[in-house]
Image 1: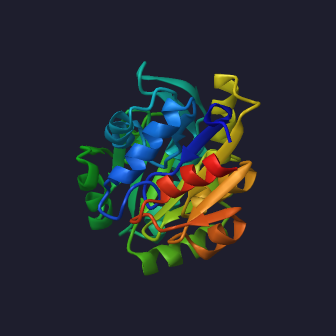
Image 2: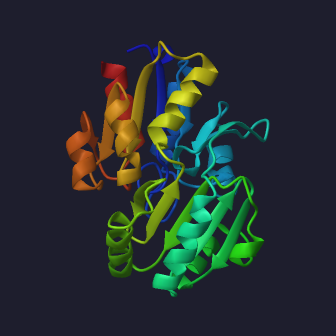
Amino acid sequence: MDFSQVIIMTDLDGTLLTDDKQILPQDLAAIERFRAGGGMFTVATGRGCGMARGIVKKLGIDIPAVVFNGAAVYDFEEEKFVWQCEIGMHARDYISKLHEQFPDLGIEVLHEQTIYTPFINQTELDHLALEGIPPHPCTIDELPDSGWLKVLLAHEPERMDEIQRYIEASDMQQAQWVRSAPVYYECLPEGVDKSMGFKQLIKILGAENKFTVASGDYMNDLAMIQKADLGVAVASAQEAVRAAADLVVCDNNSGAMAQIIDYIEGL
């Protein structure tokens, strides 16, 4: 297939990035070859702008990227949002209820360039330290009244399983809830996922006629994998994600993006 007819959007953590958060040389070389052939390449990540910026710059991405698990499209070259969708302020009540029920739960509110941390635990501290992002401690009452793009809940996997069951059985349903990792459960604007962010990006780029490719590993990637022309899962992906994919490649530590681009070239 002619690369100039293709747009690839990939998840970062667990898909393009190795377990130690690196990009393999063979994947970088394949991406450069794809882009040199006219292909459009970008990312769709649950990370906010600050946490995604270093990876985006290393990749040399020259088109906007989907951030906050689909709640925004951000142009890292222009350093500006080109589309975003906010969570309603009912989310403030949700996190108050969750804190009452689970006082040890880490909670962060992602607001454009700022990460507010009304409630913090070790899992949350580890998450912030991983990318060197400073938290902005505050109380619930001190949180801004608008601009919430995502709320991230952080705890150990077994405890997060319990929290997920609690939320699924609750009336906190004016939002899109998604498990993005064993230790994270996220609250997004109602109806928002990575596929919506991908759709908005394609509209912004005028790329409606492109052959779309989406790759990922976790449940927050499922919608965009299902809706892409070619949905790809890495071998290390969750079973439901692998089952939904049109193509399963090697795991994220073995050059998955290089395999994807080789496969596209052969179509």
